[in-house]
Length: 298
Image (cartoon, rainbow, N blue to C red; front, side, top):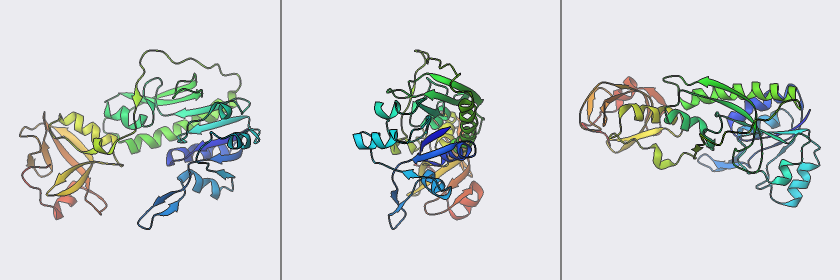
């Protein structure tokens, strides 16, 4: 098949590689390079970097709303567009251009967790399972009919980074299977009940509120690990908590009970891995070698 691939972050790279191995990728669309690092030099997205290494044509328009951009897209003559975490809303002219339309790889069991951060939100909410849906795209936000889906259990201590990698590999496998069976696949409309929205993670959500139950904070830590990282204030320094486990314990919220065990609104949280400002992530025991914890964390 002649495929247009549309994706931007690391999550999309595995899918691109799977498609290149089996089909003709006529163009890759991704977000434009962004300023990064201390020098604020423009840095290409993971998809752009990998696509260029593979010798593929890369396009990164700021918008697809213009007639010229849509005509250029249609001129590619694609059989199908595969979209995964692209970052732009596709106008109707783009959705209708490929012979078999546009297929989206979405990292949740739709209609649960439509939107930008389904992996993080599923963990944070305490969902027992999630998965991947291959969806026929339409104008609404993740509202299109589903052609393939597969569920996976979420591990009791699995972080969003670990789940991200598993779902990326699953998405690559499912889209390859879907393309092999087109056009015989029969899209199934999403149920009208059970709709939830996975809003983009706001920076303000990353701060730990020790008055919350330990089990809830542990889910927050897992959901935001490795990035942006749930954090607390330790003697005026912002410290990210990357792995933690709820345990029995009682005290005023934020009180340090022993080593790196902190009292919460209900129960306590033992920190297993943390990251100080400007330093690498380290086991809690190593962090404590250079950081004296005050009686209470902020």
